[in-house]
Image (cartoon, rainbow, N blue to C red; front, side, top):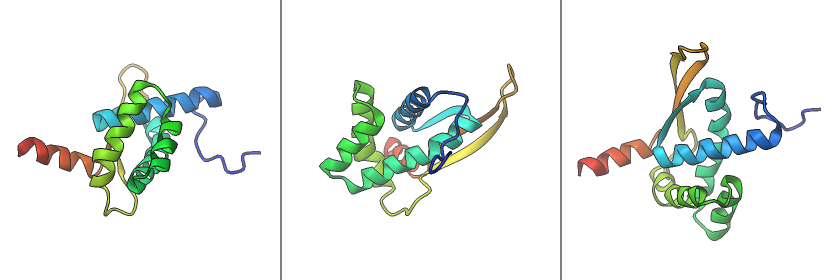
Length: 132
């Protein structure tokens, strides 16, 4: 039975799917926006938004939970620092909906539906800092 399992399977085993979501989330935090398939973007959104919710708490336990969810490699450690320092404070007043998914059409090689997922608030602050 599938009780309380909301993440789509994405034609992968659980360990492979978890690693995929970790890597996509770390890339989203590092690059602020990524292009991927629509199914992966839809699976990534709740995972990434739960990380921002942890980032808004901004205590030691939340940092350790975020490291547990993202893994313990150097990319994950950089991502947690970026998440807690820039992305979560930019979304401090927002109650949810931290990510935006923009459909891009079909990939030319296999006609897979593509999408771009990005942060709603972090892009604005990053662009404002670049202009200043």
